[in-house]
Each structure stands twice: as structure tokens, then as C-alpha cells.
Amino acid sequence: MKILGIETSCDETAVAVVEGRKILSNIIASQGAVHAPFGGVVPEIASRHHIENLPAVLETALSKAQTRLSEIDVVAATYTPGLLPALLIGLQFGKALAFALKKPFIGVNHLEGHLNSVFLDDPLTPTLGSAPLAPQVPRALRLASHKGRGSDIDYPFLGFIVSGGHTHLYKVEAFGKYKLLGATRDDAAGEAFDKVAKLLGLGYPGGPRLDKIAQEGDPHAFRFTKPKLGDESLEFSFSGYKTAALLHVQKQNGNLSQNFVADLAASFQHAVTDFLIDRLSAAGRRHRLNNWVVTGGVAANKGLRQKLATFSKEAPCNLFLPPMELCTDNGAMIAYVGGEYGKRKKHSPLSLNAVAYSALAQ
Image 1 (spheres, one colour):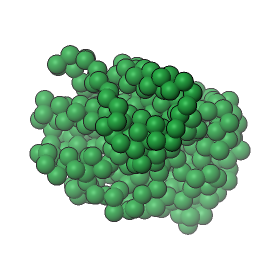
Image 2 (cartoon, rainbow, N blue to C red):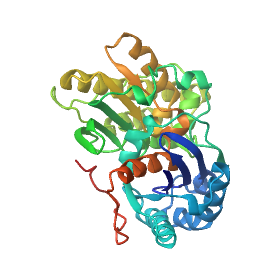
Image 3 (cartoon, one colour):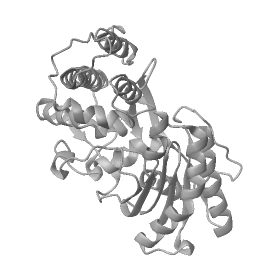
């Protein structure tokens, strides 16, 4: 069964063709350069570029997969959560294709796509337009803490989504059955990285640039206090980290030397990644979950991946990280989830509407 997956929840126009776990194509048109002058994603601009990009990205995905449109068995598209104007473009495009082809349509929750991305095979992802947002690191590092393939994961497992819009811990009891264990009270981790990068004048996209310059700094140059959320809490908060970074910047009175920027970036990244791993470890112990899946855009952060690789060598867990090209937004993860629901005959009505935010269904 060949599944066409469409992802337009933010500023990445992505289309993929997936057959089972095998990725036949996974094409992404990044809008990073388009939004850079604004210092962030502008929803209206993102949606206009999705309209322009989708036909070409679809054609490229089909060509790469050596598949005709008539050979597609199911069409899947992200319908929630995300930027509403952007979601609407991909959703309507997917529904129109399904209607014209007389094939089943499946609306996919973006978060469910991330949680299941680890089950896919591991090809490289071609990118159209500007460079991928994820920093480029050697392929060996991408799999350094990957103890096995997605097919080796047993349920239940601990799923951790860390991205620009989400920081969520889930107990994944089976496909389609998810229990939220903890989430952020304020910003998502990726948003915190982006905002601190902006404070440091690193430009857009901020997170990958902060990650790169952090490699040059001293992670112990500045101290950040871990938020006090209660002994039993598995929630997250990043507002205190951001405020502390702002105060350090303000003390420089506009004189941000290269050493200062590198040291603050390294210290901020060190503190935040330690906090993420602390919460992940606490959730694993409390719920007695030994299989851990970490995914989302921040899971492509080099500093976090290195720490996870080190931590997993000593921790009583099996740690699964998707390759970096499947951490950031992509159509393959949407297609895979669509395929799983397609096998179960759980189709969506063509009346399905986009929803800016909705909880991941139990």
C-alpha cells in the first residue's frame, strides 16, 4: 500500500510517498530564507508559499518514488496542530487529491507523526529551496544512541516530542493510544532556543545557529537555575531560563563580544538539555518504561544528541532517535501514520477541518 503524506503545519512544505516502513521519497521545501527578514514565521506568508510549492513538491516526490499519482492508495495530510492558515493549505490539497483519485483520505495529528517517525527506515531526505533547518552532523552521530531499529521497539514506550512548538512526554501504550505525562507550562524548548538566539543577534532560524555557536563556548561560564515545579511534576518551564539569559545580555550594555555570545549560548544549551534529560529520566523511572523515543526538531540539536548518547550508555533504557531528517517536520511521518490508520480502515471525512491545536487522541 502506497501512502502519500502531506505536511504544512508551519513553514515546511513536505510531501512523501511511503510503503509500509519504507520511504520511497521524502521531499521538503524549506521557507527559512523567506522568513529570515522577519525573525520568525509569518503565517500568511507561509501559507502563500505552501500554495506555490505544493504542486512542484508533489511532482518531485512522485518522480523520486517512481510512482504515478494513480498508484497512490491513501492520501494523508496534517490537520492539527499548527498555524491555521498553513494547515488549511495542505489539508485542502490532500482532500482534493483524495476526492479526485477516489481514494481514502486520512487526517493526521502532527504530534502523532513525530511519535511514530522512529518506525520508518533511514534514508536521506532531499530538500528543495533553502538548506534544512537541522544542523548537519556526521551520519554516525545521528545513530550513536540508537540501540536498534524502529521495528525493535516494544510497547509501551516513553515518547518525548521536543520541538519549536511542543515539549510533550507521552506514554505510548500502542499505536493510536497515547497518555500525556507532562508538557510545558509556557514556551516549548525550541521556541526558547529561538528567542535566546534572537537576543544574541544570531538571526533566523535561531535554534540551529545557537547550537552551532554553542560548540565554541564554555557551557559552565554562566549558571542557570533549574525551575522548581514540584517533586512529582513532569512538566516543563523555560521562561526562567529565558529571563536569566536576558539579564546576562542586558549587563553587557550592547557590547556582545563573540566570546560572550558563544559562552552564553553554550551555557544556555547545557542547562536546557540537562533539564530535558532530567525530566525524561524521571518519567522513565516513575512509569517503568525502558524504551525511550526522542523526536521533534530539537532532537536534531547536536548538544542534546551527544548528551543522550552518553546518558543512554549508563541508563537502564533502550534509546531510539530518528535520523535528523526525520526529526524536523516531514511528510514521511505523516504518510506512515496515515498508512497505519489505513490498514485499520479508520478514514477521515472530507469535511474534516484544520484545528490550530488539539490534544493527541487517546
